[in-house]
Image 1 (cartoon, helix red, strand yellow):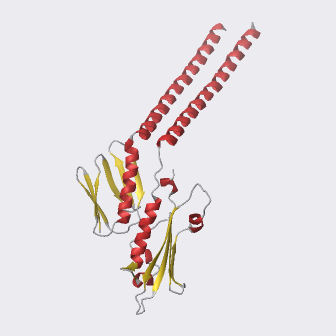
Image 2 (cartoon, rainbow over the protein chains, first blue to last red):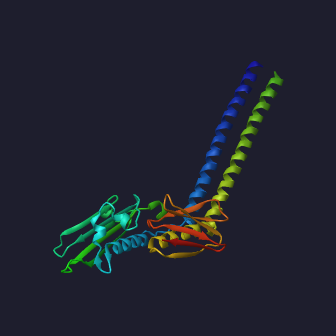
Image 3 (cartoon, one colour):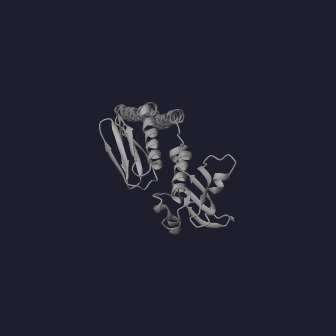
Length: 168
Length: 122
């Protein structure tokens, strides 16, 4: 009698233990199925909208307009390099990269301004990478305000990361 | 002895019932979140908020001082976060909003009427 009671107790205990494990698996299964649905819906119905190239164009235009006025070099803006962006009415964060270089007619650098983490190698790479910044590089001619009206070349390279808001 | 066994069996059944109830409650919570997420993803308001925020941010970036941007914003609330330099767009039917930053440092003011939002850059 005693032996059978003990067996009964053990059976009940083991049954409860296996039930508990079963419930844990049920919870895990439910979480996995839910996560699967979220991932599938997320992948199918959330589209990325990449506007970084247009944004880069806006920034490049703003920088170009700031550097030259009616085709002439805006020397006042270039004189204060520390306040270059401020004078151009631009506020950039760490998602941006800007490189502005002005060359004279003998190809000598007369002004260079860099902002942010160097994205130039990533912008110029031809290999396929998942997180490539939105880039734009332009070159424009401006005339110096001096008497001889020397032709200067301005190179502007703009890179924008903003991966979270444009690629995901 | 038999009484004790019956009591223990009952206890086990109660425990199983508790697990079952917990599972049901948990399933309902997950289902509600799931339905909310799927509804959010499938309705166009979410995408429209995103598009509108990005469009407005681009317009602000391209704009020169003196420009007034008129945005048809029926069903949406367009607001400005001046400290982070962000445009926030919230669909009236939704709880969440979408924001996108701009780099123009000119003074920006927002006024709105029932159907339109006016963004003045000065």
